Image 1: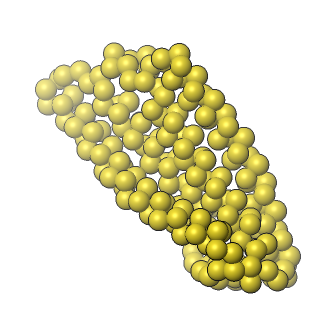
Image 2: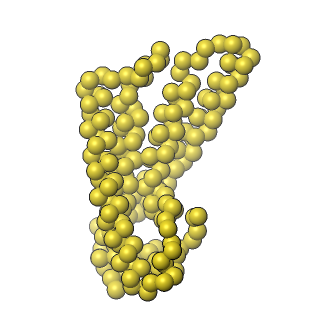
Length: 184
């Protein structure tokens, strides 16, 4: 369930105002995230168009489609991973809120901060492995096993870039409560 700000989360609109570097990084990442959301929206629309074209050409013309499925998958992988930081910025990921109402606001802030730290550790490992996978695909010239044979470095770089942006977003959410006037 996605919703507005939770009662255990203070308004963070000016949370980083006390630290100029953190505030600048937060604004820059928010701007970058907004551009990525627009591009990812276009990628989703393109994936829908490609898959619709694929279905129509198969049904109407009985023609083989060598590139449509992979192109759609590449677009979907890019849209999914590249928008992860935006979703995290909005705190839109699915979370279990069974204990939110039972704990005090201070304990909930600590809980949320600890979840962010654990998430950062996991996502940093995932990003690191994704970059090594992308590097290996680039160096070895790996391509998909289809007749079209696009380079596998494309989806791997999109995956690694998205996870890296997600790590930066989570890192900001870890640092902001510790810096400036948002400290409680």
